[in-house]
Length: 329
Image (tube, rainbow, N blue to C red):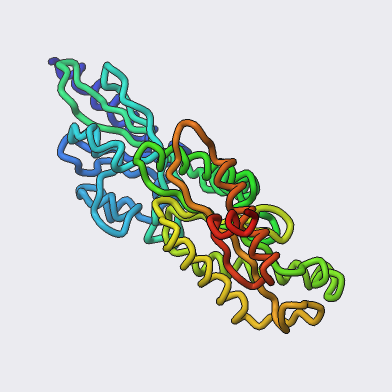
């Protein structure tokens, strides 16, 4: 290569570096060994990490995480595409030609002291002979948009008053757990619960008092339902439901009785109750092993029948579906 061509290429490289440094998009560049060769001004502003702290090192992960892990550019530089799904729950599959990756993730941002939801793109740069010479990663702060999306999801799936799952979320989860337990041949249990003589409570203490009562009962459900697979929900009005996958009738009855006792132990005054001086719950429990011939409505119907039996039996008690059927016959 002539000196003139070398000079031209040097100027082109210098221009490219200068251009990248002044891009408004946060950008950093790694060489094939994973060392940072460019950390632009926008990247400094986004991460709070000066270029001097990372250029010439492989410590760029410290800008985003509290412990070492691959950034998207590292995945490309090291050819570790198989780990993409483990590192990023939201990502696009790599194209057949191997050019470019896109992903989204929550980052801890230790220097900033707050989490950011970042959309990241990474693309390789090859020499004329096909050798990898660098990987460029660009970053976009999507935190505001992500929080708005999560807020909408919260509105769609959570009860506005109590904060627990709403009826829509309950219906969807029950269908999912019905199908899952059917495939596995496992028991699925359901608890239906009702605040005893709630209309009297509402009439006596007013709607604000009634709302406070429902919130308190929902709080007990949230604190006493421990397993991630279980779902406490507001079914409607003063009625609540708890889905208990992979749970037999004996265990479900135990959970229901614990909920009953915890609500009574709150000692929320109920001056107009015939049951006692405090707010109480009646609960119905049903269990089945789902099959193709029936559906979730069967389980709801049996749990409701058990709930009615608990009310008819004096309230502030737990009744199981088998007992309810015996009481009717």
